[in-house]
Structures are given as C-alpha cells and as structure tokens.
Image (spheres, protein in one colour):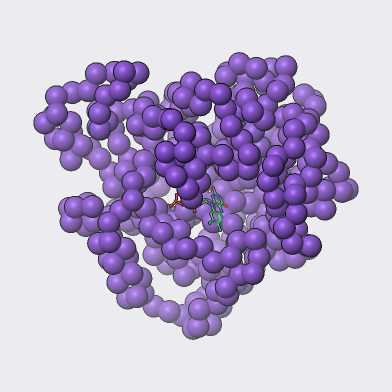
Length: 384
Ligand SMILES: Cc1cc2nc3c(=O)[nH]c(=O)nc-3n(C[C@H](O)[C@H](O)[C@H](O)COP(=O)(O)O)c2cc1C
C-alpha cells in the first residue's frame, strides 16, 4: 500500500448514509460469548466491542434472527427485547468511543443441530440435503443434523423474521444492518444449485434461487433506508459445503439486482473464506464493475504498523471499569482469531484493473490510473 493510501485510511468516509471517522472496518467475527439461556449480549461483549471502537465501522458477529436461525451455541440473537437491550449497551459504548455499528443478521439454515432448534426439530434448508460440515454445541464439535426442506408456506415467515430483527436492531441503536448471505448459510444455500434442488419459485433458475435474498433485502428496506443496509456474499467460498455450477452468472445477476437497490455496500469474500483467493475461477473485478463492491487484496506491513501504533495510543479503561484486557483465549468454536488486516477498496466502475473477454472495454491505461486515484476509496477490514 502506498503511503498515500495508508494515510487515507485514517480519513473520514461516507458509507451509504453513515459517516465514518476513518476507513477501518472490523470484519464480522463469531465469538460464542452470549449469555447462556437467553443468548443476550453481556458485559464481556460490551468490553470486547468497546475495545475495538476506534475502527470507523464495526460489523458485529453474526446474530441469529430467530431460534430457528441459530447454528452454534451461545451466539447472540436479535429477536427478543432482552437481546436488543444487551445490544443497546454495546452500541452506546461503541458510539461513545466514536465508532459506527452494523449488526450482521443471520439465519444458518441447514448448518445447525437439533439441540439448538425449537423443540429439538430438524434444521431447515432449501432442500433436504445434509451439509458435510460441523457445528459447535454443548457437547463440543458435532456433525450438523439432517435438515428438512422448507415448505413454500414457511418462507414468508422467515422474511418477516429478518424484518423484525432489523426493527429490533434499529431500536437497539445500530447504525445499520449487514445481511449475512455468505459462507454457506441459509441465503447462500438458496442461491447455489448444489444445495438448492427446489422446483418451486425459489429453485431452478438463477432468478428463483436469488429470490429469497432479494425478498429479505426488500423487507428490511421497509424498516431501514437502503443506505443503512449492507450485504455479505461469498460467490465461490466452499464454506459449509456449498457450491454452484455457474457462480459468475449467479452473482452477476445478484450484484446487478442489489446495485439497483442502492445499498450502503456489498461485502464480498474473495475466494475461500479465510483461505485461497483462487479456490475457483471467478472474476470478482467484474462484480466490482457492476456495482460499488469492496475488493480485498492483502495490505503491506505499513498499515499493520500504523494500526498497532494507533491502537496503543487509545485509553484502556473499559465501560465495565476493568483496565485489564477482558478477552480470554476462547476454548469454544471460535478460539482467538489470528489478527489479520486487509485493505478493501471501493472501486468505481471505471477503475477495473484489466479487461477480460467477458467485460466491457476499459478506458486507456493512463486514464484508468487517473480515475482510480480520483475515485477509489480506501477501506481497511480487520479481523481483531
Ligand atoms: C473465529 C471466526 C469467526 C468468524 N465469524 C464470522 C461471522 O460471524 N460472520 C461472517 O460473515 N464471517 C465470519 N468470519 C469470517 C471473517 O469475517 C473473515 O472473512 C475471515 O476471517 C477471513 O478473513 P480474510 O478475509 O481476511 O482472509 C469468521 C472468521 C473467524 C476466523
């Protein structure tokens, strides 16, 4: 990263309707630290987020929109008043420290276990196809349970759960929501033909498979302005055993549809989640040209160093009054995340790095660089 871009990371940025104090964004990271029994956020979580509130934007850990949407033990929910009150305390602390907050709305679909489901029932999925993946429950890591296919009549209820969760998020003081449509969870399961074998209006064609994702976006857009809604996609990530026979076509369509809805951002996982960027052929720059999509090359050490120096200069007293770091090394499903920092750049359509046979012609080379400098907006995502 050039010193010019490194410096830019610490400058303000308008993301959709939200003004950010800087361009550092904390990636969503599941921690499994919600209160047992209620899955409400607690003191530990208040301190955890407060400690990271020097980032311009925090995207919270994925938070289930219903008990049916839960796939791992002790993940926080956003479907009861008690959970919303817990999130309110986190928002107050983060806002006080200058950060903005989006909650990641989550329905895991088939990536769950009967012990986490209402009445011990089967997890739900587009089709009754079990994922070859594991989850974390009271007894430790276990295979996910055999799912059942959602009946057509149940789908409006799931869309309504997302909308209700968005309403609670608004009441809890979040600046916005990120719809988790990535990593092999429910919306991703519907999008991809490996997990979606339905023959009704939610299966078959690309339009049908993307229908649920877009219905969720549209339902939430009745609660929050589009400039306060983001979405996460993972076109080719094999996370949680999903795959599609033609991801480029699916995500060209989906990104075009999302772009028309003028959301705050589209957050794209490049390649495998936490793995190889080139896990499968996919032109992520093509998505970027179709919309304002953040793209994620690795940043060089300079930004890492600046981040550490900047963090070290912050006050250390937490909202709960504890001056020591309250973060334990978790022995749960989500043990301490390796700290990685990535640079994401919101590129304009004109700023594509190179043309491919499937893309529109690029402007002359010098012009690309000139526009890139003028229009590109540096953003940094961190796993902390
Ligand atoms: C412990 C852990 C928890 C995670 N939880 C979430 C989550 O709740 N929601 C989500 O979208 N991604 C989640 N991720 C994925 C991260 O946001 C991120 O994409 C991943 O760590 C890969 O980082 P990289 O893109 O810098 O390689 C999680 C990753 C880890 C390691």
